[in-house]
Length: 369
Image 1: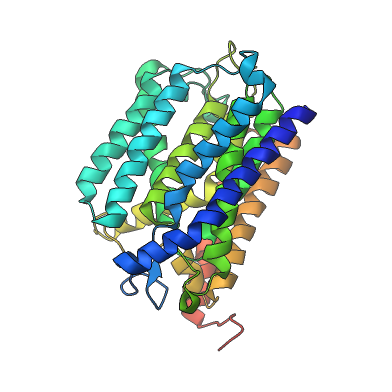
Image 2: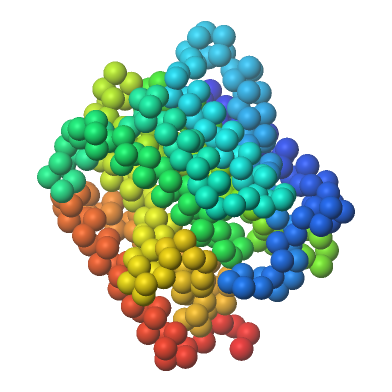
């Protein structure tokens, strides 16, 4: 285990070093070519910011992963083997990365982008990676194939787009994903034959930590600030969807049966996915297209309640930690998964009502008024 932890730390450090080292050159490239995210509309920033920071996530992770595997004795002993599902993830991630990059560079029609996302999402279930068991949630256990396939594709698309859409204020998408990836590193290290998944999460986490520094504390006037763009957020969402579904899949030949598996993956994704579902339902209720951009996402909601951008970040991160702690406590106390989900929905609705109330009463919690 000590050797495995050293490899995990090494992967994170390599990816972090690559991202820190190359980012200044990437930002200079963005300035020269004019690849900026311009203010206006539903955006909360007030000046042009380079938007290609997430371009480094995939290459940094790959270099870190390959470097550690080559130097690891487990590589030569044949412990780490390439599975079909892993290959599917690689192909799907590459497709997602390409469409995100194209969208950042020249723009892409939403329907074309969604079509490629759908192809990438279909790769996972058709290569055997399925949400095939509800572990007692809503009284359901093993799921029929006719339901598992479309449901898995729906979840992948939901996660990919929820990470993309929650990337609306500094450090929010990256901060949430850092916590999610750290959790999966810990979880995959607890089981046998899952070291490579912890390694993937570690490489991505290292690159994300470096990006977080530039995104959160970089200065636009000094040219050190960047956004991850679609190349980063879509790839990040796809990688997290893969790690989540892999963990939740019931396959005794690969992983032991874990009655809490789906609950864990669900809990880690509550904040971004619940937000997308909430926004979609409200748009339908108001008769608006569900894909129409507006200022109704969770970060807009919290800022409208009177919080500054950094305070909104802290509130939403606190909400994420609240759900993690709540669900862990409820599970330990023997509460069923069904009731945990019901209580989560109630808690999220109460949060929404509280933010709307604060917005209507004109509260201002920001330091600078």
